[in-house]
Length: 391
Image (cartoon, rainbow, N blue to C red; front, side, top):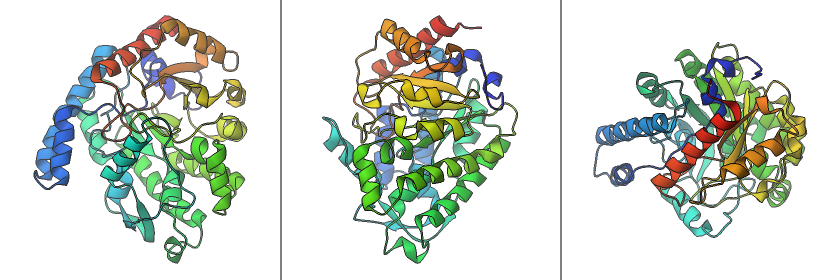
C-alpha cells in the first residue's frame, strides 16, 4: 500500500484495510451517567470511572470483531466535536444560527437530530480571542496508550467547520475582523494539539471535516455560503491550507498515519447534505497532505466514484460503504461489487473499507442497536479479509 509518508504501512495490514471512523454507540449505563453528570447528580470523577469501564468494553468489542485499529468510541465526548467548546475560551452561548454554518437536518429522523444537538449544547459564538483552556484529547490519548490492544486512533474535528459555526458578524468581528482570522487562530490551537499527540505516541490521527461535503458539495449549503458573503473557492482554499497546517507537525513522525474524513452530517440517523465529491475533488483529493481519505459512499446521496480519479497516488481511499444510519446489514456481494467499481479509479491496493461514519456522532447515537453495530463491524473485517487478505 502506498502512503505519502509510509506511515500507513507501519500499522497491521488488516488495521489499514478494515477501518472505522471512530464513534461507537454509548452503552445505556454511560448515557445515564452522562445525563446525571449534566444534572449535577454525580461528580466528574464518578463519570470518569463509568467512561473508563465503557471504553474498556469498546476496546474489547473492537478486538473481538477483528479490527486492528482502536478508538475509545468517543465516549468522553458529548458529540464528535464536543472537545472544542469544552476546551476553548472566547466563546459564549448563541441563540441564532451562524449565517454560514450548517442549516437543518434531513431525512425521516431530522427532528430527533435537532433535539439531540440541543441536548449537547452546540450553539456558541466567538465573542473574544479564542484561547486553549485545556488540551482537547490528552486524556483520551493517555487512556488508549495504556489500554488499547494495538494501534489506536484519535479523531479531531477540523477547524474550518468550527469557525463557520462560531463566527457571527456583529459579535465575532469585534475580536476577528474576518472569518479567515478566526480560522488561523483555531488552526494554531489544533496544530499544537496534534504536535502533542504525536509526541505522546498516537498511532493514527484523523481529522473530521464537514466543510468539504456540506458547505462546498451540497448546492443548498453552498448557496447559503454565498448569501453570507463567503466565496466557496476561497473557503476551499482555506480548508485545505488549514488542514495541512494542522497536521504538519505529525507528518515527520515515523509510524503515525494521518487521515481525513469528509462527513455529510450524522446525527440520530439524519444527515444534513447531499452531493457528489466532484465540487471539491480536483483540489482536495490531490492537495490534502494525508495518508488516507475516509469517504462516505453508503447511499446514492454521495454520487458516483468518478471523483476518485483526482486522488493522488500517495493516498489510500477508505470507502465508507457500510451505513451506520440503518440497522439493515449490507450484502457482502454488494460491497465486493462496489469495491470493484471504485477500483476503476483507484487501484484496489490503495483502497480500504469502513462504515461511512461513526455510529454515534452525538451521544444518543444512530437508530440501530449494539448487535447491529457488531454485525456491521464484523462485515467490514470479513470483507477486508476477503479482498486484501490477512497477512
